[in-house]
Structures are given as C-alpha cells and as structure tokens.
Length: 261
Image (cartoon, rainbow, N blue to C red; front, side):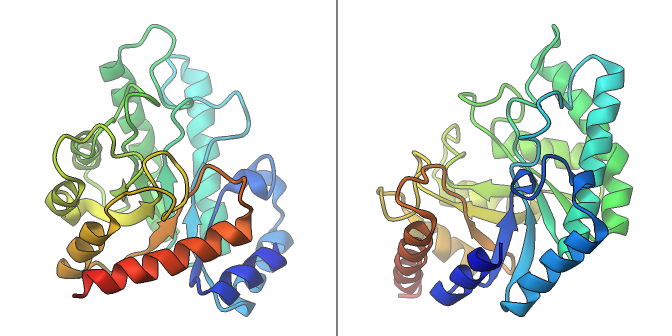
C-alpha cells in the first residue's frame, strides 16, 4: 500500500480512491489500528483519501435491492460499515455507488421496484453518512451493466427522492454511454448535484488510449468552477499500474491546458 501511495505522489497525483476489497474481504476485517496505519501512510505521502469505489465486490452474497428483506437489511448494514471505513481512512470522503450486479433487479422485482428498494436503503444510512462526513454518490450505469439508474437523469431522481445533503451523484465518462445529449451538456445540466468525476475512455481503458473528448469536460468543469476531485478509474490493467497512472496524468494535463485556451 505504501509503495502505491509513493508512486501516485511521485507521478503527480494528489489523492487516492480505494476499492475496499483490496484492503480486506469486508470492512470489519480492517482493524482500528490498520485503518490508522493506512491513514498515516496516505498522509505521510502527501495524499488525500478521496473515498471508496467498487463497494460491493465482496462478499458475493450482498444485494441491496433484493426482495429478501433480511438480506437487503444485512446488505445495507454492510454499506453502513463501509461508511465508517471511508471516514476512518480520510476526512470528507465520497462513496461511489456503482456495483451493478448487487443493485440490479432480482427475485422477480421490476426495475422500478428495485429502484424503490435502493432509495429506501440509501435513505436509511444517509444520516450516518452525514454524521461521519461521508457523501454517498449515486452512479448512473448504462443498461449494458444494470437495469436501474442508467442515466444521470435517473441518478438525479434518486438524489431528489432521498433529499438528503449526504446523498449526491457523480459523472463518469465511461459509464455515460446511454446519455443522448453531448456529455459536456449532461454534466452542466446536472452539475448542482454532482460531487465527483471519474475519467476513463468509453471502453474502460485509461485516458489517452482512445478518442474521448476530455477537453470539453474540463472546459465545462472550469467554467462552472468545480471544486471536487477528478479521479482516474481504469478497467484494463494490462499496461501496469505505474504506466497507467503516468500516461493518464500526463495526457490529462495536456487536455486541461487545451481547455484553458
């Protein structure tokens, strides 16, 4: 973990966003002392813990919209534990709620019914998230991944239904494939509810390996005076972590300079 943080700082990153399953199979397995040690390492390397993503990779039984009330309650208790892990690793963190397999409709529910269960579940932990200074982010995922909350319009609907300061949404360049308007326009339209941004190519590879228009995204963020994080999320790890991190930040710095022109 320390080597990863040192590499990120050396190549120019300011924060780290963590997939919790890379620390332990479940948050309860990360002891108080381990959390403090991770937090110390992050701070010592001059980084900030931005928050968590890929929340529900483990355990395999988790499902947050299932009609099985017991399992659904246990699953949201697990997410609540992740809130504590996020808060213990850093201040004012975000939790990006993608997890398509663990949120899609199941057990005979319609997508509308599953979405209602999701809203109820996230609302049930919103007060706890606020108390721990964590923001829960509803991520839109395309229909190729999930049958609920497939656009930013739907994600905004979840945020508005819960109506809680600890619940917001985020923009992900890769997962915006179902949007019909230009992505910069979508970003601007829902900007008041957007707290976080993920960047990658439309095929999931790291920025610079494709032809995504990051300049228009940066121009929009700058014009709207966005103050949050822009976070790399890649799904093809074959080039290696350091190569991905280095190529991405160098490429995005060039695109950001273009956005200033």
